[in-house]
Image 1 (tube, rainbow, N blue to C red):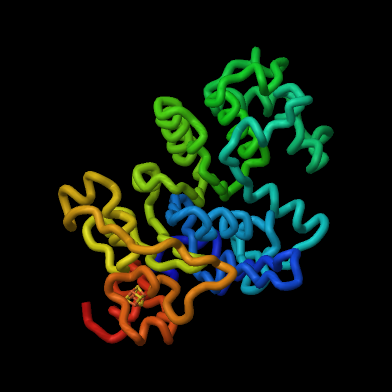
Image 2 (image 1 turned 90 degrees about the vertical axis):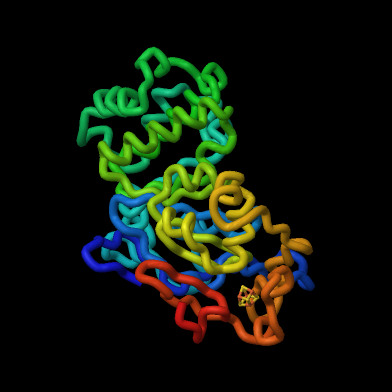
Length: 326
Ligand code: SF4
């Protein structure tokens, strides 16, 4: 999947994350099932899909917050799938996460100075660098004043708490940041401010983002490329402007038709999908989308489509493009 000239930072290679139910009778939930893609240095790789499609699990597996069941993850040339102990800790400095709920991810019993100190304590860096100066630098990066250092999370607004979450993620100079619904819990006006901040930091610090959101407008606003997920699989990957112009997978078409400006200016009006999203513990045979796909045929229910590059950098998993020249 690699494109020429761009430097790959992350490779997910046939990645799988399965969960076994606690009950004996409960099946295996295939949250992420045989997913492969590259993320290039300095890009924002957006991921969209309905709730439960596996986007957050995928993001967490990329940085080993959830251990993969199978496949490989390579981060900056090092396979991290089986790292342990000090090697795993060192890797965590390179890849961080910003969580959805800033209230839940900051310890209410610690003040902001103590919260921002955590990464340096965990990585035993207090004696190796001027941590206080670094903390002040981090606050400056996220546009906050040092007066907040003595405050506790409950004394801050949602937007301020998320800025602290971002500062903490930046503490160890990571290359990759997983933004897991990072603005979803914020008011719309604050969302815009935090998105602008993330964009500024990306440019200033040369960051790479894996940007997960159920909000298509947000993903479009920030992403260089977009992956569309459905029930643990990737249906389509393309540059965001390509997907605006031409999407091939019927699920992408339905999903993106829900963005008003796309439906109005481009490829018709909203496409309504019939039926519920099937359970990932009992996914449909063949193409997982066939039970809801308006273009499904008998073949679709039997054979799983492979991911194909149908234009440079544009990947689609659908039988409609297995043999046709597009
Ligand atoms: Fe629809 Fe068949 Fe394509 Fe799946 S493979 S998206 S069911 S046409």
